[in-house]
Length: 81
Image (cartoon, rainbow, N blue to C red):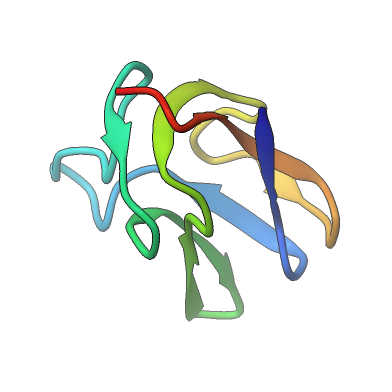
């Protein structure tokens, strides 16, 4: 399992905007470099991208949750599709 962590403090969002579809859902096949969410701090948005390929196992935080640097956000089961 690989854990994607927040690089900075802010609010985690699973969608690019209100009313939009999530970047990814649990059970989705994930590719290296795929955007899985965003962290917003003071109207600055940072994409959270996967550095591994596999299947999105779970989200460790909910949409709209506050995160800090190093907090686990997403768990990916590597190498399986």
